[in-house]
Image (cartoon, rainbow over the protein chains, first blue to last red):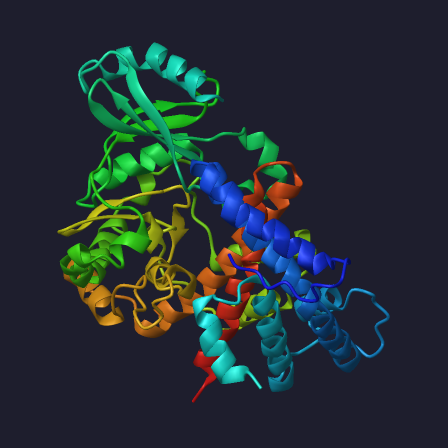
Length: 132
Length: 337
C-alpha cells in the first residue's frame, strides 16, 4: 500500500494519518508475516480502519441528513437519536413512508454504504440511479 | 479447543465408530478450514481418507438470549437433515458420526469429503469451470425441487411448521432488540408485510442455498453444504435466496448466484417438480433474503459485544449496509413502471 504524506514540514500527525500508518502496517508488514486465520484477520482489520477513516469524513453529512429527516417527519420529537426514532416511528406507524421519505432513505444509504463498503457491487447501480 | 486436544479426542472416539466405514487407526492430519461464522469446519485425514468435521465452538446456551434460531440448528439436527437429503438425489456428503455437546469433541458431526471447489471466487472465474457454470442454474433448480420433496413428517422437532406472520414478528422483534438502528431494514420489513404473498403450502427448505455453500466440479453441482439454516417455508423462498444480490459475488447481471439466469433455474425446477414458483414470487424472496442478511449482520455485532468472535465478526456487523442498500434497490425496481 502506498501512502501519500503531505506537509512534510509539519511535525503534527492527524488521527487520519495515524490510521493510514497502522493500516499500511497491517497490510504490508503484519499480513504477509502471518498465516491462515491471522493473515485473513490482519486484512480485515486494515479494512476496518478504512471504515473508521471514511466515517470520520462522511459521518457529519449523514448525521445532518438524519437530523433534518427527524425534524421533517417527526417535528414534535426531541430525540437525540434521529435514526432510532425514525425507525421506531416506521415500525409503529407514526410515519407512513411516501416517495419523499423513500428518497431520504436512498440518500442516506448512499452515504452509509460509502462508509462501510464503497466497492459493494450494487452500490454502483444505486449511485447511478439515485446519486446527485 | 486446541488442535492437539481435538486430535486426541478424535483418536479416542473414532476407531469404534468408523470400523466398518473408513479404514485407519488415527488422525494423520488436521487443519481448520476458513469460513463458517457459527461453526468450525475442520479437514482431517483418518488413515488415508480425508474427512470433514463440523463443530460448534460454543455452547448453545451462551447465545440463547440472542434469538438462537438465527444461528441455525444444532449440529445433531443438521446431520439428521443431511441424512434425509441423501435419500433424494441431492448431492450431500455421507454422515459418519454425530456427537452431542456432552462429548469430549463437543457438538459436532463427521462426514465424508466430497472432492470439488468450494471457493466461489475460484469457480466463478476459472475457465476450467465454464462448462460447469453453464449447467449450474438448471442443476440448482433440480436440486431445490428435490429438497422440497423431503417428507416434513420425518424432521427433527426443531424444524417445526411456521407461518409468514410469525417470521415477520420474529424479524420485528430482532430489529427492536438490536436497538432500531436501521430505518432501511424497518422500511423493508414494512414493505414485505404489505406485499406478502398468499400463504402457500410449506416445504422443507435448505434455507441457505447460495453460491458460497455449493461444491462444484467440472460436471457442475457436486455437493450442497451447510444445512444449518434449514426450515419450513414456501418453495419460492429458496429460489429467491439463491438470487439475492448479496450472494451474486458482484456479477449482478447473472441473477442466479452470480453464474446463471432465472429461465434456467426455473426450467430445472420444473423438470423435477412439474411446476415452479413465478418470477415475481422469486423476486419477493430476494427482498426477504436481504432482510435476513441484514439481521445476520446485526446478530454478528451482538455476538461480538457478548465476547464471542474476533475482528471478522465485528467487521461483518458493518456489512449490514449491503443488505440495506439491496433492499432499497429491489423495492425501487419493484415499484418502477
